Image (cartoon, rainbow, N blue to C red; front, side, top):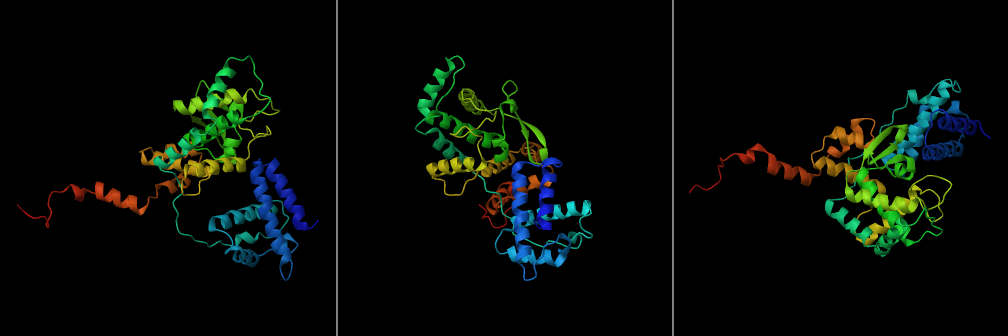
Length: 335
């Protein structure tokens, strides 16, 4: 094992035990650091020791990946490597941290986050609720309510339709990250308070309230079926193998219903989160509340939703500018 690999393993253990990062964050760190280590070892003059990495090494690495990844991805990868070298510096494994002299200079044009319009969201929900299992699921639920502590021995289309509809409704109604949705357990849902306890990025906690009757009904119907399924865990959303849902499994079902709805744009679970924020902002909700709903640590992250399209800017100026309210018009023909 090389010196670099040894310290990477120690760093990942530190992130898990001391910083208590989520498993998917640890996995991302591992991938980014392995990629950096492979680059160092593939150089004409290979670098195997952490102390051999310099500012120039980092600049060369960024130059080598700049045409392969988007700016935000490069920034994320370099943030991971920066964190690793800060750890090495703290534990005196290196004499000098190369990041003290390194500046990442990357720029990209602003892109509005992808979101769904109200019309598109209606089409998406219509695709979900027109599923062939929708009618039979309602009948199946009525039977379950009359059973004493039922146990579902097989998971059929009725179960998965209820699951899928609950997932879609929660993504849009609560603006959840896909990792937050997959991490929900029975104890995180308070039916009396109509609330969800969320543990988000950086272990930040927040409570979200579900006020829409349709969303509550869909979630309650699914939970009735889910509690009838015996598993060795308490995760709310499960696969046909009774394992907790993965982020990729959620992405797959979103893609399925997107194709059924015929929406001509790439829709991911995160698009529902963007739609949640954008539509609330358009409805006049204060951005501070939206920050709390989304679980952003700083309002600067939430402010990306303040950017509007050129079309929207034209519409606002045409309708709201005070000059439009003034009666004098030099070019208007007089009677």
